[in-house]
Structure formats: structure tokens, C-alpha cells
Image 1 (cartoon, rainbow, N blue to C red):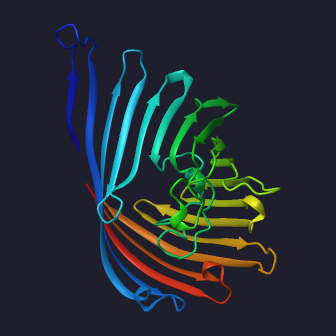
Image 2 (tube, rainbow, N blue to C red; image 1 turned 90 degrees about the vertical axis):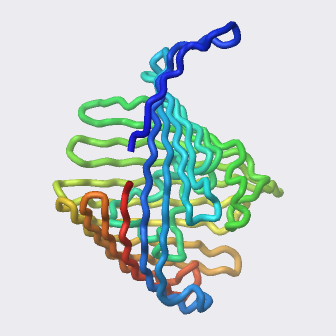
Image 3 (cartoon, rainbow, N blue to C red; image 1 turned 45 degrees about the horizontal axis):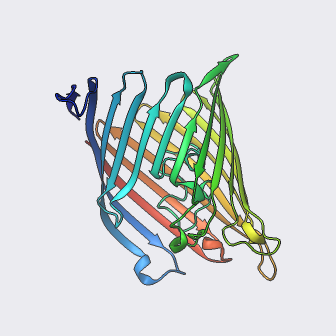
Amino acid sequence: MNIKKIGLTALAGSLVATSAFAVDYSVSGNMTTKWSSADAPHQPEASNGKGIGLDTDVTLSASGELDNGFTVSAVQVWNTDSAVSNTSSQLTMGMGSLGTLALNNRFGGKANGIDDVTPHAYNETWDGLSDTNPSFFGDAIQKGVITYKAPTFEVAGVSINAAIDYDTAADEDAASSGGRTASSNSGTGLVLELAHDSGLSIGAGQVKVGNGTPAAGGSDEEQVTAYAKYSMGPVSVGYQEAYQNTENGGQDKSAAFWSVAYTAGDLSVSYAESSLTTEARGSTVEVEAELESLQASYSMGAMTISAATAETSNANGVAGQSYEENEIAVSFAF
């Protein structure tokens, strides 16, 4: 929904003199109602059973062009069902042949954007369908991140994209979620993606975060990931792996994802599996959590109906724990 276009002309007087600058503003959003049924024997009773909820997102966007041809855009997203109303915001400057520069206040970094790129009809296996999350790649540099994206160029039918993220205080507010603390040092992320006209695309990324609590012989944290996707007509398949060398000799982690999706017009179906392995260290033993999900979605104009059934074994990295969830959602875009 395009609201208006405003032209700011040169202001009279000696204080300000500027050229015309046209800005486009738009507001969009979506409203989703969900029915879910969760079975998690290891969770409190309040986390089990059936329930209905309503989620609303509102997005405010603005974009314009400077006199030198650079473009500037800003995006602000609010989730009215969240305790944190500012769920995502980003300021981006397009510099033509010089590439793109972005400041991501909450999320939007390139590295975290490829944490799980496998195709799906509704959600990733872990997004709202499990209490186990194998998408750890880039999680330490997803807030307050500066991202530079190089211009796309082609070689023999292959499109090449590269980007770098820089975070001055990696995951500065992740202590409450069990992540790195406010004492974390800076972090960087590198991403390289290649896409061929045949439908094949591959990509890889690396994240390094300084040792936030230095210890004798302590080490920094490093994450790597690589993926491959192939689309042929209505069928898409994807496979991805990720690994984390945890700082100061902590328990290392590895993850794997694969999925297949079929799309015919407005109908999409997918099946996906993923896993998160927490490696043994000291007296702890290695545990592999496995997630799987069957999903479908159907769109009718601005309305989309989605359904998913998902299971997790060894949930939260605890052997023998299970989690199951079934979900039906109806969303409206406006």
C-alpha cells in the first residue's frame, strides 16, 4: 500500500540549501492466526496441549535517491505480539558499482541470513516447530551489524555475490538466551554465493568472534557453513552443513539440513530433516538431536493457509527427550 511521495525542495534562507529529494513511503503487514498442538513430556504442562494465537507484523519502508545516484532505504518492522516491538530495522545505501552498505540494528546481517537456506513450504524445521534450534550460524553477529555487499557480477553464466559483516560487540544482548555475553569482542562474517542459470546455486560462509572472556590458552569462536540447492521446474532440493568451534574449548556443535519442496501454482509441499550435534567434552557425552517436518501451504490472493507436522528426538540435546507439534495457520497480507 503506497501512501504518498514527498518532495523536499531547497529551503529558503541562508541556513539550509539542498536539492530536491523524493522519498517513497509504504506500509505493509500481515496477520496470522495459528492453531497448534504440542506434546513435550519434558516441558512444564503449560508448554503442552492445544492453543490458538494471533500474530501481527507491521512494516514501514522508505526509499529515495540522492543527487549522485545513490539510493537510500530504511525498513522498520514491528511485531505486535512480541515484548520487543522493534523486531527488525535496517538502513541501506545502494552505491551503484561500489556495492551496497547496510546498518542492521536487529537482524538483517548477511551471515545470519544463510543459517538455513533449504527450501520449505511453510517454516524451517526448527522455526516455531521445535524447541531445538540447529541454525546457529551467524547468531553472534545479527544485531548492530554493518554489512557490505559487493556488486553482483557474472562469469560464464554464473552470478557471483560476496558480502562481509562486521559487529563491534558480537551478540551484546544474548546473555539471557544462553549466548555470548556483553564482554564479547568484535565479530566478522564472510559470505560467498554462486548461482548458475541451470538452477544450481552454492554458497559458503565463515564467522569469527573474538574471545569474550579471555583465559589462559583461550581461543576465539569460529563458525563455518556451506550449502547447495538445485531447482528444476516445480521441484527444489537443498543440503547444508554448519560447524562451530566454540570459544575456550567449549562443546563444539555441528548441524546438517536437507529438504525437498514441490510447488505447483499456489500449492507448495515440502519435507525436511535437520540435526544438531553437541560434541562430547570432558564428562559430557555426544548427543544428536534430529528434527523432521512435513509441510504444505496454499495461497489464494492475499490469504495463505499453511499446515505442518513436526517431530524432534533428543530435544534440547538431552537423550530420550522428544517434542512433537502440529500447526495450522491462516495468514493475510495487507
